[in-house]
Image (cartoon, rainbow, N blue to C red):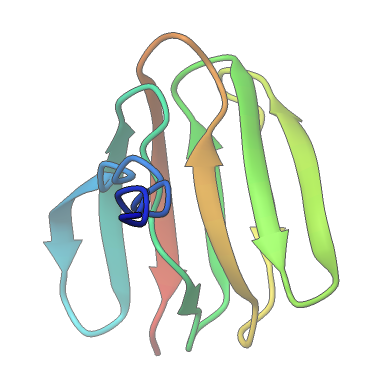
Length: 107
């Protein structure tokens, strides 16, 4: 009797990367536009500088940190700030493109 063929483990679909475009990087600030296709993510990263985010789209982002997963509701033009040292992955939880501008305070 022959053994049944092995079933390969399910491989999760690849997560598309969010697309950053640096608009200004002058030593004092770095301004980056982030574009997220539906389901796109930044990948886990650490912010070495304090930063401000200005959403250009209204929608939901899924945030994954060492403490777990949460959802943030963002509104166009409603900025928020975070201190240096934040570590997370950010994923577009919408069925449409999501865009925000990130302003890092370098100096």
